[in-house]
Length: 147
Image (tube, rainbow, N blue to C red; front, side):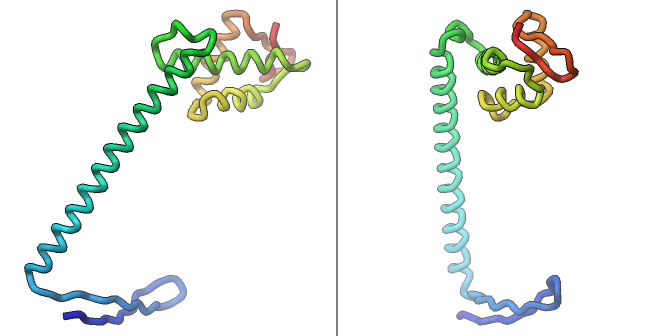
């Protein structure tokens, strides 16, 4: 038996009427509805599993593609590959500039290599480059140059 129910619910600016159709049937129909919902949930979980597997496969392929670049062939750790790519991006930007680059400009360039890069990690990479002598502090605070 189908029943049409009208009710109002409070909302911002007053009351709002909602129309809803309620399906009141026997207990067996309710259990078949539960089975249908459970089957749909199982299907969604299966698709999530498949998509997760696909994402992991694509991640491995991306890592292999990045490792095929010159300069990162012998790197085995994923974090190291990302770090090397970011460091290369920073050094390349500084080499191509005639004037000092700000930390914000360098961070933006580093983010193009890894969109998930955190600012603290970026600063660690920049400090590593400074210790290696690949970048130098410019006269102004927060600006860097290539030596």
